Length: 231
Image (cartoon, rainbow, N blue to C red):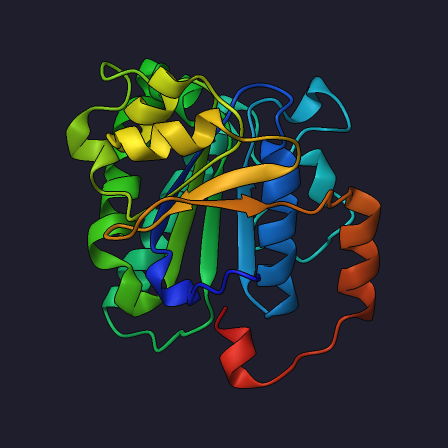
């Protein structure tokens, strides 16, 4: 049964999962749908140069990203500043309504970098609290979660949660929910667990979305009705 979520509710989504459990596959699936709906995407991926399977590398073929994939510290800081400026511009009445999504891979790793911690935390909190009405959203991905790296004040700003296979204690740290952790523990194969701010966790099937499939779909896709475009 397909899971439909209006994109306006996905203001800020925290994505977890152990190494090689399909986080990049899941994000390729989600981001390819955003791109088919004429949204703008910007990616921060510190492990961009780690190989072809990195999330950032997976979208190298797409030449219309809102800003170039950032992987070095200076470029990461510049991207955060660029987003902050765009949010302020929209809040002041620029009239821009095109959805803009910031994707942050290795989120907790970046939070452990003293240079990046403050601007990243401030931007994520700003997106969580102010950006819904100006169509700016974020997805933050990580393997490990610890209260010292992701304090409750930051974690509680996320409205939706996704996880591929992970240790139950890590999944519970991700959301604060035991029922979410229990569903994550039962994941088998290409699956993830999804939970909204006030909903129950749901275990979902994740198609094996390859980079080649994403590229093919984006080249051949056509826009459909407005209601489908909001999902």
